Image (spheres, rainbow, N blue to C red):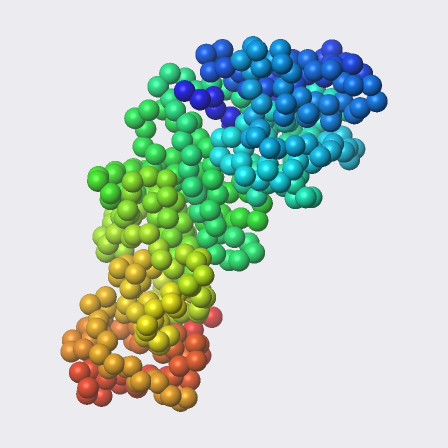
Length: 424
């Protein structure tokens, strides 16, 4: 069983060893201890060559431990090839500059390297915080940009516990899309990894440049996984998502499902609030609209608002590498919904398109028989479906003035993209 490293800290571990550190001759270096030692890390004394900075000497010994430490079963937390290029000081902050090989580390190994570096550098009397940089920037998966005594704790998981690496999705501040963050946790055997995924999502991101997707007041009341389907029952704080903007709602749902799909065997998710099923009891699968491969491009689509009064613009990624034209792809997206399988679609999921013709002023779509019945029976929501279709095509260069809809070749209605349809 591997040791666990968490950035939640017990400062006593550091305070107890800082005294008596003679940086003129030796410095304390914290290395990974054998798994059966009863301690995750252990310190050894390393010499400081005459005229060399104590922090730089400590980092060299941390990356390449003394022979006596290796003989005792201690290990460096760094991957092979990582080098210390220098140590600088900005007030009480030690700035450790590492080679680019450090960027290849991730997950628990990265946390271990962060922890050992901070513990070691905090032994230097003038140091109260540590920054680890590569080419002037922190590791993109690092836990904190600045580490201090209140941020680090080493502990051994108890018997029956194990480490798990989770891939969590949050909203990128720079791109506005979902971006993955890898995080290590320690969980008891037999516990639901799905619960841990959601609880970590509620805690929010630890990487700079990422924003939360779930409200921090949200509670997960129940998790029930069967085969590849997971039911999540949330507290009524989930209303903040279901009654908010459609864009934020889609990000939250996509983040939940994509995180579960990446970290567990879950393929689809059922949502409930205080025991009441949401989204008509439909399940949501991994969301194609958040994929960032080169074959995808970004578009603006319009979806009915949660209050049922307007349509709202939402950013979406569409696969443009196929044979269909953009007009057909946009219609397919509105039918396919968030996951491409009909979840919360803006058009009746059973809709079938017979033909689409577009010119500079009008887009004509011929739907299969039954589309008219679906729209008419939906009442006001049916009107919003048509408005979403008209605005989506208009916003992307189709039907700039009007959208003509046929059903089985016969005229059904003409819809314009009116500004008053859009949520204020």
